[in-house]
Image (cartoon, rainbow, N blue to C red; front, side, top):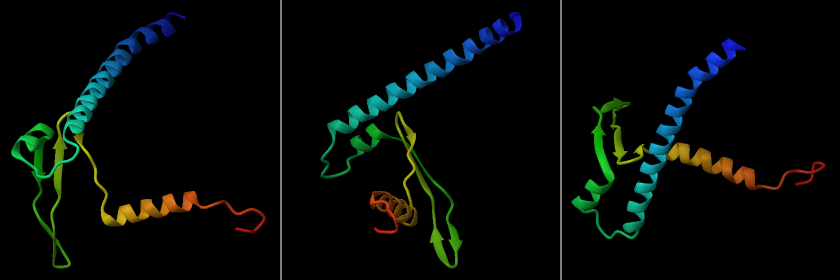
Length: 111
């Protein structure tokens, strides 16, 4: 019983730290959403808007694959970090999965 109590006491600090981190992430995400709501219909990308939303942009060294230049660009957004965007191939795969999940399931071999 004492060992269990000791283990539980040790896990309290870890759990409190996790909750604190989650709360900060939630606040940052809410701030980002509030900023996005202010500029929903942009006609141009101004330096002020870039500074409002983007923390940093990391441009990687170009790679050449089969003679074609490929270069990664990571955009870190303020408050939410990096957001992964899908390649066209990944988008097509996800779209096909979505379409297939919407089709009615076959019953007794009849579609």
